[in-house]
Amino acid sequence: MSTFDVIAILVVLAALFSYMNTQWLRLPATIGLMLVALVFSLSLLLIDHFGAGLGPRVRVLLERIDFSDTLLQGMLCFLLFAGSLHIDLEDLSKNKGVISILATLGVVGSTLAVGAGAWLSFGWVGLGTPLLVCLLFGSLISPTDPIAVLAILKTAKVPRALSTQIAGESLFNDGVAVVVFVALLRVATGAAGTGPADVALMFVREVAGGVALGLACGWVAYLLIRRVDDYQVEILLTLALVVGSFALARRLHVSGPIAVVVAGLLIGNHGRSLAMSERTRENLDKFWELVDELLNAVLFVLIGLEVILVKFDRQLLLASVIAALLVLVARFLTVGLPLVILRERWQIARGSVRLLTWGGLRGGISVALALTLPPGPHREPILAITYGVVVSSILVQGLTIKLLARRLLGSSGAAEPAPVAD
Image 1 (spheres, one colour):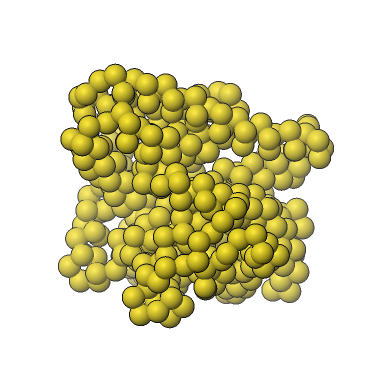
Image 2 (tube, rainbow, N blue to C red):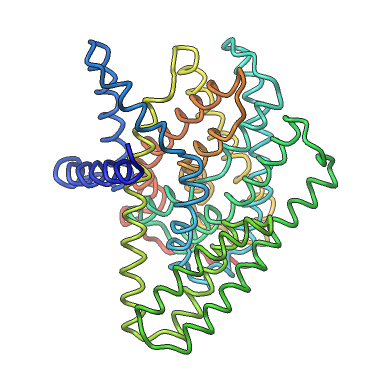
């Protein structure tokens, strides 16, 4: 089966599942697509149980897709850019303190809390997972997925400042989490250069380098866009910006996700207001909305289908439930403690801690990172538990965030919060 055949099957399934969701389920697109794909996959497994022989064929199809590489080195840059285009830089600046703490200290704190809790609880259910492996699990499950979060925010009417905090954190914390994950993975595999100074230097290089590269590439693209008035050329320049900056980040060993987000913020704000005509803005928005919807559809179909490759048993199901609760508790602590300690500096909107906790969805990035774990006795259990946490996060939290927002903020879900000041 060729690569084109694989892409064709995925796009056809995404279109059919989207149609089914729109016609019958009427759930938010990402949740509906993943749910339909999940039911489809489980149905195939059930049919295969009676000797239909469909399971091996589907596994061959999915094994041809490197989910980790497809997402982390392919889809992610486009999805992050599309999401950052519509983040208001002024709102982001007003909330930069909250976002910075949640995207850095929040990720590190969550990694430690989830890792310690998993080490204790996994041993209780009989998995006997080493502490370092549990910390790896904590690092890969800690980032909130910008793709899932941004898609859900479209349907949940939360206050503007709070929406900016959730979206801003989700766009930046995946880059930080990847650095933490890579550092722990190097320690686990015994790679050279894993001392505290080495890890700190790598962290600074990845984050600061990603910001600098994003600003540089975004500024060059901005200057080029400002000199032309042809929306087709300008859209092509934004495409070049995305793939070029992401590829260059890989060569320079800096954070590609952070570089793309920073470039998207620059183009989405200064580029949109100072360098584009109304016609270009309209066509640019339509183009990137289409890219966002198409890749989101394929991604969440893939997440739903991946259950075919994941091996579950009662022990792993119990561990997944415990891990999902651990992730929520760690999220509540790492969100709540900083905001409570610094409440004198920031005027926090009513219900922010609970909404930030419940709105911290996990998604494809966690699964992709789990798939990069080296072969070993703990890889498959960690992958299965990660998948269980991601699915429960998207289905349970994603389906109820709108109701929680209404309950905490009033029936309209759009109450104005107190301003967040730095």
